[in-house]
View 1: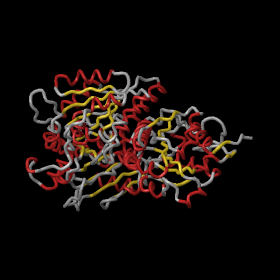
View 2 (view 1 turned 45 degrees about the vertical axis):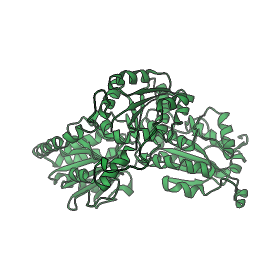
View 3 (view 1 turned 135 degrees about the horizontal axis):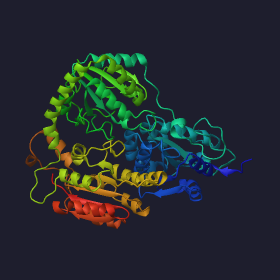
View 4 (view 1 turned 180 degrees about the vertical axis):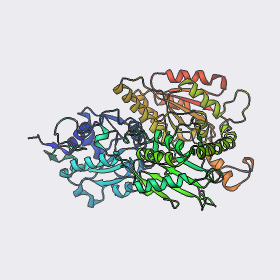
Length: 584
């Protein structure tokens, strides 16, 4: 007979049995039973100085673990514990970011006792309504008897592809009530002791194989194409641990079988295709004119896409009205969402492997060669513009975005990069051929995700390397100055837990993206504008700010000092921040 324990103690026991090693949070009174139970367990509480920092760090942690879920023990989920309505409201920005990034995240928040809410106590609010639009599932545990089943469901839903956040509200009285119940297993095991999280492939199912009829129809469309184009999205790179078939390899097989040119979706932030492959052309910028140019073909195959549209309304369709469209997706909502299409739903690794086999049989070698000639022609057309991205016209000694990226790569070519560089992003994407699992970023677009996510990723990388007996990779946070200044106190968490993280700040001392968007939206040249609220004048001393939170701070304003300073920062024990003065 199990000794009675509180709901909070049962909650923490479930975390331990599911292989959860860290809970991120910023504590409050309604969370004290959970925080105290964590303190008496082997789970480590990771303190963030703001709830949104805690959410972003937990999401970055979960996203990196998701990439290695087939190698690591326990579930890949991140867990974050927040404080009633204002705390949850603070965390909504990065909950949105986690949803867009597909982070397998379990978000919890303390809530007032059930019998007390009619008095409308301070800090109260409808937590489920607040969170449900950014989660796969949002609910409240209304009895301690329901707690084991709801925890099992929360972790299973978060970790089932397409992965994403879930939310559970935990009332104070439920967390203090006693029970003799046990945590429930995630998978099919009936063991009542030991770990309840089996290896991910047995615990969490993949989305299954596609409908054979839909695969045949997709193969026919590709075979009949004049100039097929494959656009790969982030749902490809996210599911390497689930598939049993590497979806990035499967995308290569499909592209080669079809002789298709390949692009990355707008706002793609995973490595979904090798960018040094001869059929890779470019990421698609969020520009109406450029996207229309790249999509101007007779047959488009979208694989795992979700953010594949412009930043504001486009006047003409991005996809030609007469184009044949094939959507390959693990998420039924995304299939044919913005255009009529032949939709194949299932695990992207299996779907693309089977589709590649079908296409291989019905496309001749001569046809493939003709298509590859068209790929080469488009690469030449696009390369001149892409090669210039970030290679700014700078004066002697000044630092361009391209020079910064080149120096980062020279210092740590095998690094993991968490990107929220915004206007420096295309210099990063065009000058560095990342391996799968080495690049992630702020897919949601709201500033303030990247720096906390880099902190969480650094913690996950340390755990990954320790578990597998590897040398940890360098972890770069590539964070624009406007983004960095949202949550600079994220560095406190990195310093508190002695994380090996190098934050590189391409610092142009303004919200450059807003100036660029102003000119794109309204026309004219920069000198025509009196930009409002877009410049940092006086500038913030970012290096000193980093030092105030316990990190090492560096400042670079001459290109000759760039690589040596980055190398010193990477070798630094604990977190470091390198503020690099780049030109617009």
